[in-house]
Image (cartoon, rainbow, N blue to C red):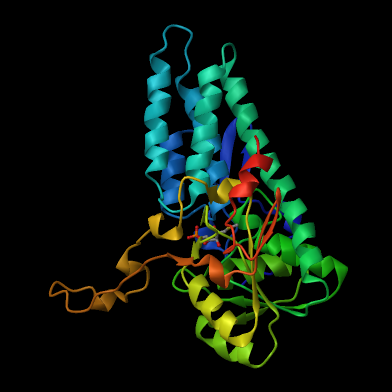
Amino acid sequence: MSSPPNKLNVHALRWQDRQLSVLDQRLLPEQVHYDIFNTAPEVAEAIKTMRVRGAPAIGIAAAYAVALSVQQHFTLDNTAWQQRVYADMEILAASRPTAVNLFWALAVMRETLAVVSDSPVNAMIHKAVEIHQQDIAANQKMGEMGADILGDAQGLLTHCNAGALATGGYGTALGVIRSAQQRQKRAVYAGETRPWLQGARLTVWELAADNIPATLIADSAAAMLMQSGKIDWIIVGADRIAANGDVANKIGTYSLAVLAKHHGVKVMVVAPVSTIDFTMDNGSQIEIEQRAASEFLPDCYVQEDGLINAWNPVFDVTPAELISVIVTECGVVFNPFEQGVRELRNEYSI
Ligand code: MRU
C-alpha cells in the first residue's frame, strides 16, 4: 500500500475547466484516481456506484452535475433545454435514496434555475461552487463547536467515513476530530465499517494524511473497547436527520449507540443543516438504501438455487434518545429527544 498523499492534494470533488473531477473512492487507499465528467448522467452513475459517497459530497456532486447539465443543454434558440435539465435532475434523484443532501442540493439548483435570466450557465456554476464552499465553511465551524463540547475527552470512536472525502472538505465527524486534535492529543479509533470498509479504506487513511494517528477496530470489537473504558465519545456524521432528532447514518451506528448507552459513552452526531429533513417527523419515514448482496456475499455462494442469501441495508436509524448532542453549523442541540431539531430551521438560509 502506498503512503497517504499530502492532504492538500486529495479532494473528493474538484471543479476545474468547467468539468467535474471525481476521486474514485472505490480504489482507495491503493490508488488515487480521478475521473472527469461532463454530463449529469455520468455523475449520477458515479454516485450510484459509490465513486463519490458521503451525504454532503453526494449533494455537492449533484449540484455540479446540474451545472454540467445546463452547460450541455443551454441554447438561446428555445426553452426546451430546461426540460433536458429537469430530466437530468430526475436521473440524479434516483441515484441513492437515503442521503437527503442529494435532494436538498437538487432543490437549491432547481430554485436557482427558476430565477436565472441571462447567463444561466455561469449562474448555475456559481451556485454549485457556493454550495461546495459553504459546506467546507460549515464543517470548519462544526469542527470548533464539536471540539468545545469534547473538552479534554480522551477516547474518540468514529464510524464509516465522515471526513473530507465524504464532504466538500474538512469533514463533519472527522472535522470535529481534526479540530479537537489540534487542541490536544486524543486516542482516535475507527470502526472498519462493513461491508464497504469506509473506516478501514478511507477514514484511517485520511487521518494519517493529516498526521492524526488512528487505531482501526473490527466493528465487532466496539463493545469490548467501550467496556475497557477507553472511549468517551462516539462521533459520527449523518445521512438524514428527522425533525425529532432520529438519525439515519451508516449501518452499525445504531449498534454503537446502543452499546454507548450501556457503557456510559456519549454520542455526538455532526452534520450540516442540509442533512436535516424537516418534512420527516421521525426516523421511521426515512428510506433505507438496500444494496446488492454481492457487496459481501462471496461469489461462490451466488448460485441458482438461491439457498444462501444476504441482507444488505447500508444505513440504520439511531433513535434521538440514544444521542447526546447534534452539532450543526447553525447551533448545537443537546439531548435532541427532548424537542427534536426543529428550531434550527429558523437559523438556516442559503
Ligand atoms: O454509503 P456511504 O459511504 O455514502 O455512507 C456515508 C455515511 O454513512 C456517512 O457517515 C454520512 O454520509 C456522513 S458523511 C459526512
